[in-house]
Image (tube, rainbow, N blue to C red):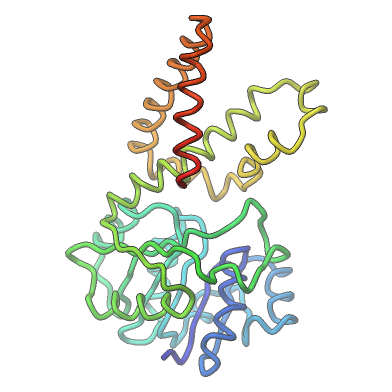
Length: 277
């Protein structure tokens, strides 16, 4: 299906994808591109990649599939470099958590060789780096795919075939719908987890157990990944945070009312929604 697959970024997402592609596409040459010498060395040692390099122009040379596994604010510079050296008709995918702003940037340029398809596998972990690689990370996970009027139909079809090797759970969304839905179920929880860490006192942290640790797990993720996500999806985040504040205000009012039945009703409604998830 592919002769050369180049993966830019060898952290959890990119490293895991490289390891999986080595098995899923045995006829393809897998190239890993990273600024980290440690990541390149381990990926080569573990045979997750055939080639490992710090140079995008070398790593993406002749590639017919390139996957961006770096922060969303790095995509445009990488695309400009890739377009100079990739194979004619190459497909470029991403695994980023924001789509509308990325596609706006992509559509503002004319590309000589590549076609971009915005993708978002809903898998991952708060853990980071090459040491966290899991070759089975993408297996059976939900993959969100987006396209707009400028998306190449052939490139989109190729992208869908690629992800179908990993999962049958593929959902197509508009870029705007993607950012709205993911903003609610992914970006908002991360923001709340970060706020919780700032709210709880140092003495309380000393007695924190599994409930608090589970609730704030995602706050351990890297700011280099999440700051660009929040900034790129600012409008959605501000809207959903306002809705969250309203529910927090309702909860506060229920406590002030000293009516246990109303408070229980509020909690029961949340419990029922969670059980259906």
